[in-house]
Length: 392
Image (cartoon, rainbow, N blue to C red):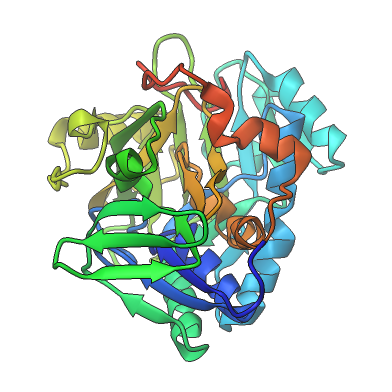
């Protein structure tokens, strides 16, 4: 078990690695943070201004984890000294798992309002009723992704942390009492402990751990809508998850910190080559996807302006069972990957949780069962398809 003052390498300055690096530095460790790019990079999973923080799930155990995101966000916001999240309210519309969702919310005492199908526009102005009922969670909202990352990095450096951006880790050599990583520029870093949180690049580094996991990284696209005349949205809107109907994709949307309204469908553009980051750095948006999202928004969210002010693509990494992978794989290595498209919702929580894993071998029992890297055994084939929101 590491003592305060040990040396720690954190590989990956994203939604999980950066808050964890700050937490470890605050706990008195000597932390070096290494990233192939830098925070807010378009090539990894952490670009953009805003991410959905929905405080809703179909499973009670996940709701327990989600509920811990609020106090950890509050603590992280106080630590970095800038606003990193906001309550916008969220409407969750579904026809298959609404009962399960209500039960999960009630298990953790999360307040919600049951919304009849005909009344959905009372909670989301301009939403076209389609016969499905919904839930409204007033406390849900958005995480300001760029503010969170920038604030954490600034605080990390001010606390004495060392940051090595634009440094690609190519190999990991774990030993019983130390661990060494090698980089593409010929440098080697050795420490007492390693937290590997490299997002879509994690799979490329698993051979050094003599480990294989069912991971597949994807590219997903969102579209930003705003009034043609610059200014605020004509009607303040909450966030929304409009779960999939039939064979179509689900829709998620939220107010963006820029003043626009951000929307996407839970259907990736494509898988990254070989299912991992590697050298696949093509981040072009797709015109057909832009049109399909705009059509869906125009049809169902009638108060969202039709004017498109931008698009964005980013990556996320799925696992074969749709759950995170966090835990100790070696005496000197803690692994954190498989964000399943929910990395920023858990950013502040993971900062504390992963730091605890680095410091102790006693993870939360329930999370350990669900997230343990060893749970897959020999079943290491990556997922064949993406499961829609509300269907995991």
